[in-house]
Image (cartoon, rainbow, N blue to C red; front, side, top):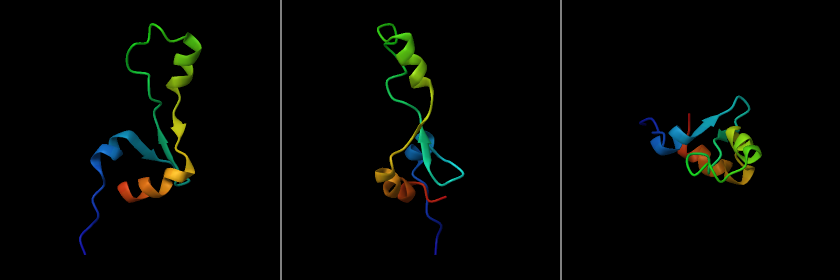
Length: 64
């Protein structure tokens, strides 16, 4: 049986945590930052934990 390949696009965007959850970067923090408030930009820096409803999809894309 061959090994299952990871989805390379997903692998670049999501990382698996020690407790089998997935973390990702916030959206809307790459450009057009002049109109966004400092508070909003500061909060966008932090990583987010992906909702549990999407775990099943991500586990299939990133098996390892």
